[in-house]
Length: 281
Image (cartoon, rainbow, N blue to C red; front, top):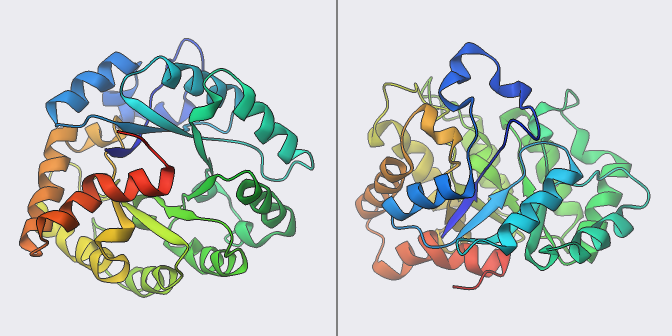
């Protein structure tokens, strides 16, 4: 199971974040069929489709796509956490075509200028509605936003959080602290799991190997354990630095080097995502 990938159609919804020259390799459409081809080559059978833009209509489109896809088993969508009628919006999403596949909500917190955005009263109120709807919340944060994430997770023990991309550690520079200490503090809370995803695009895109990623994966394994880690490709964003297959093979090699038995590797590659997101084989 791939716990994290994206799709987009530029004719339906422009992606301004893809306009810088360095993003040119992925500044094109990526369809379900494109993903299915890449996933099959990497041995992936089921997946979680994750929101790209803060747009509820995109979420509705993703749910409809998932309903017709043999691969997409769940959707992490977007909803405005600060709207007072959020409960009604979440109910409307759940009632839309394919709405039964809605598994979580995510906001692009990494782009918020306020490092304590997650600690705002209106945001916390929205997160409580996400929990009441029986959904997971995907945390998309960068290292300096982790203190507010830790506070928020502690304040909302009723909500299951999933940390995306291990909070984007500074792989390119090789630094580990203070990121590692903050991730360990977050992982101490039992209502948090994390994705082994997005690391290769935090490395030097054309000059990385498993050794460059090992310190960050080792911290994650020690902090969360395999029972609270899940594999995610971050496809097609990962294509900036490597294929889905290369990333999958790299994670497999790192888990083998760490001495994980088959059952624990199975948790990372299937079991954790299936349990946390309530996915079916």
